[in-house]
Image 1: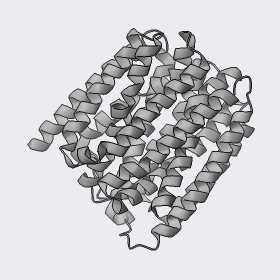
Image 2 (image 1 turned 60 degrees about the horizontal axis):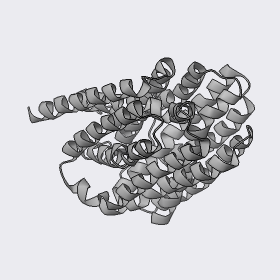
Image 3 (image 1 turned 120 degrees about the vertical axis):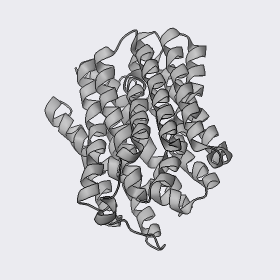
Image 4 (image 1 turned 180 degrees about the vertical axis):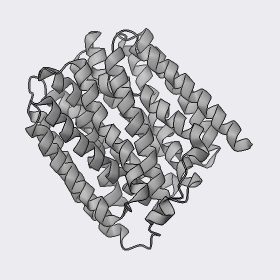
Length: 366
């Protein structure tokens, strides 16, 4: 089970790396504007936001649904290649792709959190970071001067993700896991922890500029594409380091750590705003990825896993509200405000996310 989970994370996040690091810049080469890129990359996360509400009422996330989502993810990458020259068809392909990706990861996260200890989870999850880093380094060199080759990498990583997902599902079936039913899921309440969900949403809105425009932003400030690949990779190395050693932190006050990680993230965006062309300080900001992504993500999903009895649905809503709705709004917003003040605005939004977490803490105490 452990090896299957590790390889799933490896290929899944290699797929994510191809999609978010290189696809936005590739689309500019096909004649898309920055605003169109923002709209396109809002489509996939928006589907991740919608799906949990459908699952809450009508569908149970079980092994068969998970397997279907893996197949649709692979088909979605083929559609992305076929429709790249037509904006609306390309947007449709991204909606299909994003929706299926939004089903696969919550299922695997719930399996991992159920069967792995807090120490082991980070050491398995870091394989996703390794996959993300390796693909960024490889494609940073391989794609210079090419346009269509990126679609081959997109489909290949999706295919390998599908294979490993099937293996994870087959292993998981050997264990006794309490399946969630639609009836149980209908008792799920977002309002009870509304400030937490709002903060998770705002945090990902603030990541919109980074995920979709970091490569473009640094390129416009004179940083070479190869150096940008190293910047991405350095952030992931810091992330891997945190994932490996974070186990002890996950036994402490999770809410306090979540607040700390949110505050540190605002500092990260302010550095990018103040020193966009400084290689040293940009690397310094990327080192904070260990806290603003790795630690934040692990603490958030663990915290939510503890709050709710509907484990898989809770992970779907985490992905849907944060990376889904937050990522969608963040992508569109970043496309609209892209320019000199992009990361200043993202830093301010992150400060607001921190303040909302304080409201969540106060609400829980009363």
